[in-house]
Image 1: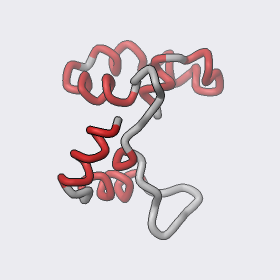
Image 2: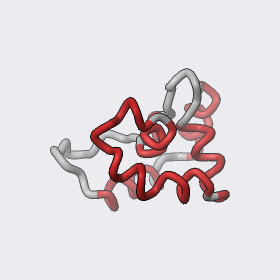
Image 3: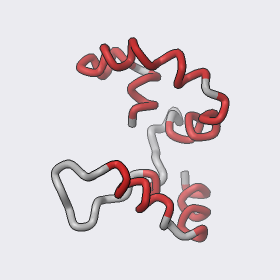
Length: 85
């Protein structure tokens, strides 16, 4: 979601200090190009595997747990969701 905030900071004014510090670097990073293109799609669709629900549900999941959930997504699910989006 941070990439969407960087693309349209006016719609997320609460995050403007963060946007000011990081926008240029993140939007220019070549290794993030494919991810940016995927999550900043004009239709706002996002593959579900990129934002899995934490198990068990918690108010503030740990970043490492969220990254682990994304890494554990099967190739078949990734392929299916990418084709859908």
